[in-house]
Length: 474
Ligand SMILES: Nc1ncnc2c1ncn2[C@@H]1O[C@H](COP(=O)(O)OP(=O)(O)OP(=O)(O)O)[C@@H](O)[C@H]1O
Ligand SMILES: C[C@@](O)(CCOP(=O)(O)O)CC(=O)O
Image 1: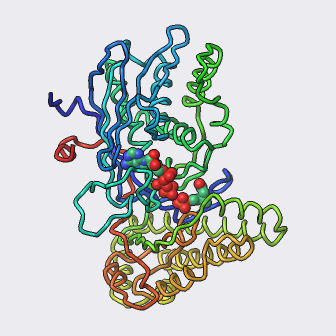
Image 2: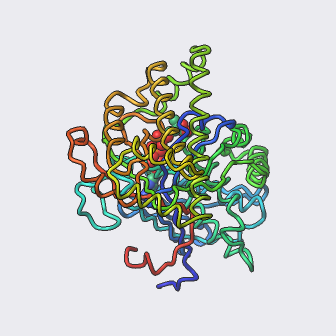
């Protein structure tokens, strides 16, 4: 049976680039700038029937990947309300899917918002090509791979966070429509969605991370300040024993935690008008957890020098954030003045030093903000290099230093950084929109290992999608 649009629950969530705030974002006193990207993961939930009506099922299909089908049976305890989510084929694992299903269904049960009997559902996942390495540039939309998802090389855009967020949104929407006469809209329940997705993501990862990727998937481009890790660690592990005491304790803690205020910083912050984020894949690969450990050791053992670098890096990140927000405000206040300066930058062949000189010559707030933007990116890099030398973690390795220095000479480049944990994965530039093609066309030998990605900032987080836009792919 083909279902009409209102019976489909379609949501998408974006990937991320942590432009400023790697490592510091792990601590709640620091702000970071995370940008949402044009690559999205879609989840489409629709009613389905289970073979055994007494045992409802959730089936998640991700047909772009081999063995991309994960089915779970649901059984709800009459006494505690705990919903056991059991994989139909136990060897077929997707921890993020399993955790999202478990978290959403148990939260709904704990809040009395789960219909009885529990309806079955099938969720289709579609993932933009940019999340995974593709065999060539000329592949169809939602390209299919010949391997299982865990064997396809990733590009580091935060696929698990986008998947967890869109799946959580689709399940929440579907199950709410079955239980409530007037289900809440996405906007009305965004914080609940965020908290659920964070809990599911941490459960799947087996640790409480900084959560910037999930926050970005939900809220889009933001100034992020993390929640306290203790908020999530207060939830006991999902009970597997059938012990009523454990089940009730889990449900109570889950409901209380999800419904509480986490005080997460999610202030809006986007790339200013007529500027673009340009991502370059350097295809090296880095071990983030090992790098985090090295940085933590350096900070603990590095004395006053390490602390001073850490504090200065925090200030440089903050300075970039206020430059981005300030430029946005100036563009709205005086569009003609802003456009005039952006025209000048775009027409000149100036790299970041020239842009800084132009800004300084203006004697205006706008000019000062341009100087601040250029300086803060240079400062971020300076302190990241000190962290690299001090910790031994290859955050801005020499190869990336050479590359970013060369990028700074290209027309319209305000600056660039190694995003996220840094390393050999990628670089991220802030470029005048009009000069992006000239930057991409740069032919110097420094750029021979860079693949400019067909990505841009798209600042919107999770959103409802029209089913019609996806129907042909399902
Ligand atoms: N399209 C998808 N369909 C089903 N599961 C997916 C999909 N995309 C991601 N996942 C799940 O997320 C896992 C990848 O998560 P992982 O945290 O390793 O990578 P990532 O989030 O892309 O990494 P990074 O944070 O470095 O960007 C996959 O193995 C799978 O379990
Ligand atoms: C180093 C760290 O602060 C950022 C990692 O970012 P990415 O996965 O490299 O985009 C770790 C984290 O916040 O989870």
